[in-house]
Length: 402
Image (cartoon, rainbow, N blue to C red):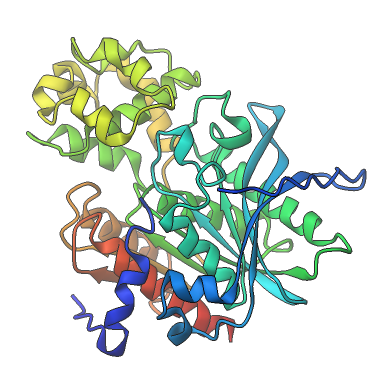
């Protein structure tokens, strides 16, 4: 394992603390008939250069902070279950004329409507991301389906097709928005993508789609995937084999989402024991945090999960559909062509390091070179590793952008 030393960047780690965990100027931009994806944009607020330096004075040591930043909520068209819907996300523009690459950040797991990026843009974590636009990126943060403009829908947690489609479409909408004459920060085809936990999985799904299908539309420069549940079946085996698992809401979120969105027809009682099974639907109503949901469940997997699910998942035909869905929404390694880094904390007990190690080995077996794909292990558990992953990713992106 590589020994990571922060050297002169050590004091910058705090910049990224909490990265992944309001006055509004409501200026509506009408839809343009020529726009296929863009619907409207709402100006949220601006960050001046001084604001950004006040957020963290060390920003100027990472890159020159020369530009103010404009933060908007964008509403756009996408499709879900073969129907057109509206979705939303943040777009952050340097307030200076020029051509800029897009950096798309995919969120980690969230269960609260009020914590979606467009609903909580002044959260410390989002302020840090928004400030990255001052370094010469157009920063995009999708809400995901089920949040923001699509909050009337249940969130299709860890559903690959809808997640990827919604991210592709916000990127297209941002390009259409940028074509407006009044917008001086113009997006280029260059794209950097980054995500942690659920966002790491979403980032790799997005990379897969772009490399295989949309490479003519997007020039994918770099992909940073961190601590993602890339193989949902692997995660299920990891969790169900545990006596104690500290984040039971991860697994119950997947089970509830697949049932709610119609991917599987099993009742929740096939997976979850009483009295917890009867709580699940109300816990995932968009009003409760992951911490609260955990407190209403139990970390004892023998008490939470049915014996049939724990011991018979692999062979019992009752679980054939969800087993198939786990496989369909997992990453199948391919011969990637984009410079990619897999980051993972060495002491992660939520999503194990062994999953990223397996993905790395499987990618190399597909013929991916070690110069294209790097596994970067950093100290800390699932929460603690976020800080260093964020720092290394931004420094890497800035280096490539030059």
